Image 1 (cartoon, helix red, strand yellow):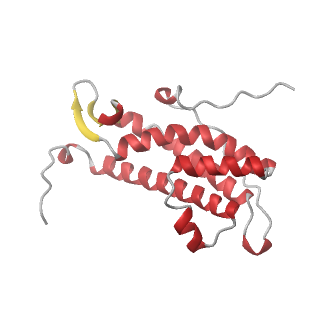
Image 2: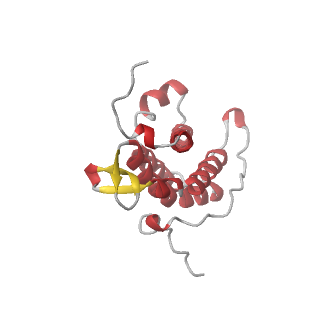
Length: 184
């Protein structure tokens, strides 16, 4: 096998690389399920969705879902899942993009960090790994949303219960903003 020329590889443990890989796959699955939600809302076949929905980025998929929900209101359960999902995914998208598109550089205080030059944003491994609970929460939310939209062949929607909201990592508090509850 041809050896990699990059110096950072030997300093990241196999365990850390595995954790980054697992998080990355979870983020991809969340985005894929969200695409399936849009596919269902648009009543598309798999082939039609492959041509129309799946080339869209995450933000476009969410925007289209919101636009459709304004025309054809969602069930209460689906809307609640979507409302909870949107701020969570905004924070996770920041981390995902920072990890997937970053370069790994050495920082005097933090050790090796993920630096995204285009945004001048740096995340430590601690920052990245601190979103695992939030990632799992988002996976439950998108699953709840998908199930609430119903299934083929007239199978009724399922009211999937998601877990309680985990604490938001401090570095994401300004990004993950939940709507304030209306007073009755």
